[in-house]
Length: 279
Image 1: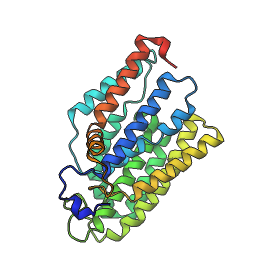
Image 2: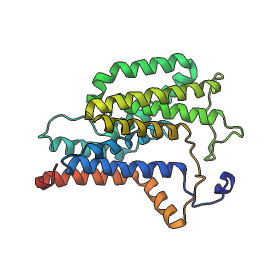
Image 3: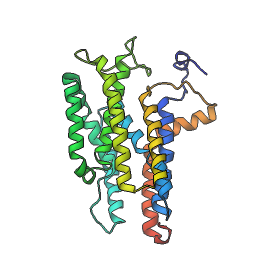
Image 4: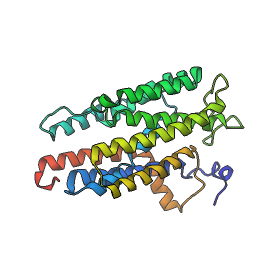
């Protein structure tokens, strides 16, 4: 085990987010493989459900305000491919649009939380619950993705708020907590974690109709994932694998978007051009 201070001096150390992203992109491939190519894919979907929460959480956790242009045109392409394989019926816009909207709105949501505290938090939660019946048709993963992003935002502010040296674990200056809200982030982040996990399990069960045993696995998996996210801090991991594995983890962590796009677009094209392979 390597101390965190020592890790800061290692140029090729694995970041905690590399572990999360590698875990998530592996489950993305599992979920998509089952969806496109396996006739009885319920169990593939069970494990695939654990992928999207990680990316939405990290979208809320991250500070970047830039929306890369390629997110938009890749989202258009993936949405069109999805519609193409459903006889050009209307489909929910690809998840990349959801992530772009979250990144665009994050500064405003943060400002509301900093200014109005628990009142803003509860209004946001009630607002997301109110739009849940229609949000799924408007953006991929509907309000569920926004709940995970809200959890990620509260977690980031909690981590920044407890920083004692003016920097977080990744060496960045913390965002301002404003109006003495530092103590509130702890409660907000825990409540956001609980609400998000319950809503996500509930909505995924409605969509997939898992058996009792499968639902139990989903619930346990989401509970474990939620705990890991509730203790997540961006920065060098305390677990550093051998360099060949570390190199792979860093590469996967930094190329999850490309892997997601290639795997999803390739699957869409394969089942359209070779229908016999489709589930």
